[in-house]
Length: 54
Image (cartoon, helix red, strand yellow):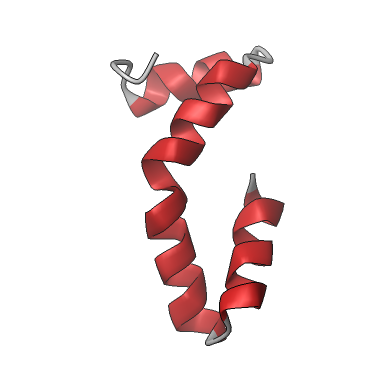
């Protein structure tokens, strides 16, 4: 499913496709964590923020 573009993945997630959600998570987890860490300055809080976002 990772060959799909972001729009297609988001549409699939909106229809309840858990595999699409995992694909988005795999694609953006590191980026999201890096941003959260820069903002929060704490790795535990950053991980929690990323998990809450998904």
